[in-house]
Amino acid sequence: MKEKTKNLIELHVSIFLFGFSALFGKAISLSPIVIVFGRTFVAAITSYLILKYLKQSYKLNTKNDYLFLCSIGILFAVHWFTFFKSIQVSSVAIAVLTFSTYPAFVTFLEPYFYKEKIRLFDIFVSFITLFGVFLIVPRFELTDNIAQGALWGLAAGLTCAFLSIACKKGTEKYSTLVIPFYQNLTSAIVSAPFLIYTKSSFHLKDILLLILLGSLFTAVSGTLYIKSLTTIKVQFASVVTCLEPVYAIVFAAILLGEIPGIRTIIGGLVILGAILIATVKSRHQEVPVVIN
Image: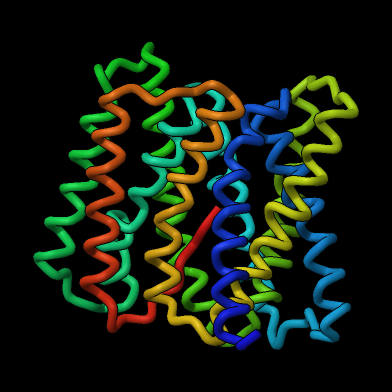
């Protein structure tokens, strides 16, 4: 089998696994902060084992690099908390679709950090994605679970935008396997103190699901995705990544019985369509993709 064909398979498998991971927010009967801790703790151990297996060093060059990657890890903890919170208060479809608006936030944040000009086309696409969110939410009342889920999902998208910019800086110096190790390790450490406030009852099923989520659906899937980029362009991977929310919604409909309403479907098509067009439009730019 040719290396590029092998990498293409790895890419699709990783997106398939990432799409499935959203369902754990419903399947695990624990609070979002517990899920974040369990996922990142297991993922950190798995990432460490992968680094040891590949004989790659996890040591960083300077103290500032440790602080930088640890700060990304804190942001990751916040991102995953908001994402799983969105799933639990609303539905998988609402969470993954509103989270998918993160490229719109990147449009306005990236020029600030990289001293670039905002393109009119990108602004137009950003408003289209937000219009998709408007279609999804039937009424903007904080007592409405869909509105709550959309707000948490948008918060997940905003933190993801910051993560994509930060990860872009991190990959300039370190392996894309080292960065997730510190992200997951820091996320587990900062979320651990909050466990005493959750008063959660741990069941064997939840523990097994957390192990599965952290290992196969986080560390392994992330490694497959990164490995696929050795011969596949980031732009093409960005297009394939648009399948992640599609997989999540289909899996939720089949396994959880969460059938999205017509407004959610239309709004989702608007959001995904805008992101797809923007991705193809920027095909000459190698921008890292952040996936769940």
